Length: 196
Image (cartoon, rainbow, N blue to C red; front, side, top):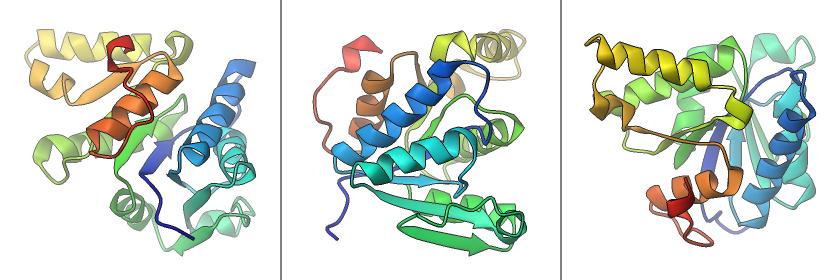
């Protein structure tokens, strides 16, 4: 199999959420990554948005790398159809391997796990542990309250505008994906940065 054009690590829910749009966008992202020659890196599960996204990427002929802790495999949550499935001992190892395989990171709607992974990779970016772009898909206003809170942290002096500038946010899927790929130094299919 030829080298992928880019490798995108996506964090998202292991549940479906209560809006059909969540699943539709997860499917769209998996398909987009595959049809643009990319590789999906994700948490290795078959449930929720994670499974829908991985299935879509695989169905479109894409390469999918899953990384999952042994404890979750034992609960039968692993997606055994991944191109590569790394079974690791703990969450720390999981996140490290996912980060090492990624050119860029994107968080979709999700719960506590998605938020924890997003904040950690953002923190790593501000500390200089990596220089890879980090994106947040604010689908249907899902992250409006979070972004408002983060801005209040800036206003209160606990964060800076520079830190906020380290993440790319957008509500439209393709422009955000293209911006992340381009920021990672890969070849984006079209230039639509102005739409974010």
